[in-house]
Amino acid sequence: MRVPGLLFALPLLLAAQPATLEEWLAAIGRADRAVLSKSVAPPPGLAAALASRLPALKGQPRVVAAQALARVESAEAASVLLTLVDDPDLNVAASATRGLRDAAALPSGTSILARLLKVQDPTLRSHLYLAAGRARTPLEDLRRAIAAESNPEARDAAVAAAVRLGGAPERDRLAASLRSAKADQLVRLLDLVKY
Image (tube, rainbow, N blue to C red; front, side):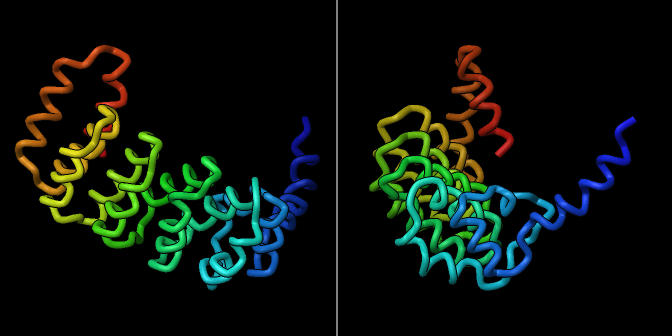
């Protein structure tokens, strides 16, 4: 039985998790994923501190910074994430868009849509459409974006966002897509329905 070994290791695991803002910033600088543990709450001031340090971060530390920002429930963190949406590193941009998609605090839906127009990757646009729906974007603005969206998967996400905002024609459109979906499309569409 190896339980005693585990009990001895527990203090080491807990000690390795950052607690102060300085420890968090140092861990992010090392791309230490301990800051992404749900058992460790982000410290106050993290969004402001990362906003000023982001230009110096490159590669994996920048990705971890975006993922850490996604855990901070503040308008400031959401604003910083929105600036990372068009980061040249696709991993950073993906972390930022997923963070916005799932964030408790969001920038305005209009600002999300404005940033979305600059994003080339359809998967990232899909995340942003879902964030825009959660941010209560005006339905007519979202409908204009749907009309302009050329990628079918991103368009489906935009339609789901419009359904969330009460769009009846979009609800019918999503239902029709579900009825005609092939097996490989069905899982993605069902995720949109759960959204």
